[in-house]
Amino acid sequence: MENNLITEDKQKNKLEKAFEILKTMASKPSGLIGLTIVLFHVVLALISPYIVPYDYKAISPNTMLLAPSAEHWFGTDSLGRDVFTRTILGGRTALTVTFFGSLIALLWGGLLGIFCGLVGGKIDDVVMRVVDAFLSIPWILAMLLIVSLLGTSTEVLIPALGFFYGKGIVRVARAATHDVIAKDFIVSARARGHSNMSIIWNEIIPNVRDAILVEGAMRWSWMLLGFSSLSFLGFGVSPPTPDWGLMISNARGLMSFAYWSVIAPIVGLSSLIIGINLTADAFAKALGIDRSTKAPV
Amino acid sequence: MLLLILKRIGLGLITLFIVSLITFVGVEVLPGDACTTYLEREAYGAALDACIKRLGLDVPAYERYLDWASNVIRGDFGYSLSGEMPINEVLGPRVKNSLVLASVSILIGIPLAIVLGIITALWRDKLPDIMISTITIFSMTIPEFISATLLILIVAIWLGWLPGIVIIPSDATFYELISNIILPVVAISMIMTAHMARMVRSSVIQVMASDYVQMAILKGVPYWKMVFRHVLPNALLPAINVVALTIAWLLGGVVVTEVVFNYPGLGRLVIESISNRDLPVVQALAIILASIYVGINLIADLMTLMLNPRLKSLQIRK
Image 1 (cartoon, rainbow over the protein chains, first blue to last red):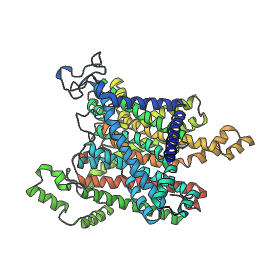
Image 2: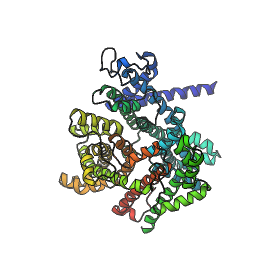
Image 3: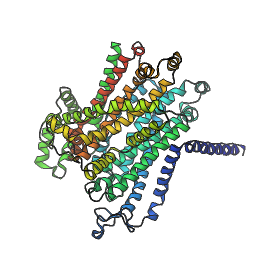
Image 4: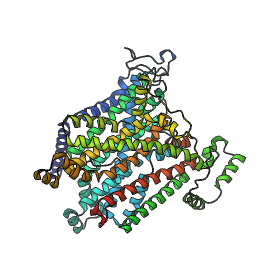
């Protein structure tokens, strides 16, 4: 019973802390704008299937390339599909893929980084060499190769993106672990005879969590960029899935007279990426982590 | 010092060796070999046998790796499947075109970034900073293909000032290239400048807050003299590494930009070779792009090492 009370208390504290962080983030205009944009996109992604006025894959020769009007707010594309419908459904595709991708990246990158930082020695050397080697292959080449050989279903895309964007997190998690590992509480946990697993779980993770989460938030926006670039090049999700990159690439050839079908997905994608970036920056500042001097690796 | 440089070069070579292993093993492990993926439905009978013979796929994998690696070291990447010619001949003009694009972007981007970074740092949180910082955030977060598409839409289609896409063959002369690369250069240097300007800004702000700058102010050193003599040399040094990483990181973005503008460089070759499932070319590209990345980082490390006397006697941190 008493135990229960303590955990409840702890959970309340955690919620309060999260609320505090959100409040600090929203106290600056850039953070507030970022949070608003991200919230808007997330809500839209959740409710979009229920509010769209048209079927996203309904092709009709009668409604080809119509300019924006009362029936078609953002006009129609070259196959007569409603651009408004496809744009707000596109956010759903992008957010789903990149959310799960980032989750995978955070998990494997974070855990491997912590492990390497803690163990050190030969294993650490070898793993870091391999991570370096992966970092030096341009992401786009590796992603394109995987996708072109394994196919472009989301079951391939999500793990592939998660894998490729996790390798940078390994370095951050490892560096953060190095910072805490020399502290007294780790030494005393060792002296108490705790196992490596228990030290990782109880002592290291609570101390490196912030740094890894901030990095993950940043990776999220890069992954969104990478994912939409892949779709744009024709190696992302396959048509007729509503996806911003794909929409931009399809509408690009006709933009000299039907600019609306390229503007809508551009606004959607740019606003989401900027929103995530502003939020990640505000998140980093609220947690007291400076990332202005970091290079985009 | 010499030992340190040698160690750096050694680490770079090890990284490249692992890259070559990764690309080779990756192509081996993924379903289908070079011949079946390239020939697709025609992968049977005489055509398949001929292809396997030509690529030497009938010998064990490790022998092929050793063979391939020793050829690569001698500068021979083998045969392209789709072009039916040596990969070196395919690569040559592409490398030149990409080099032209990259160097023009860098020549414009780096000075611009330094100037913008200094302006935003010295007028921190004032109007110039807010304006420039907002623009840099926009241009560094928006994907390359979006800024490139918007550039084409606005400059080429609505204003009609410049041609929207590059329509020159890959073996065009230098002068033909120069007149065609304005829009691609703008698209690439926009992002590069934004990243570097932010870095310079925070670096200058950091140095401005340091003790020796306070000391210079108290001594009565004139403001601009202090900026140029005491602040900039110390602030720009750490920027070198970031510049290198930014350039290397752009290798990925250049691929997309080249495709949007139809520019015949290495980036478009990446897409073409993957669409054609020309795995030997893909392998060659992976090694080349990784070498550029490793090379740029190595140069940046060495430059920081040379320019910073404090590091000469120390082991620089990894």
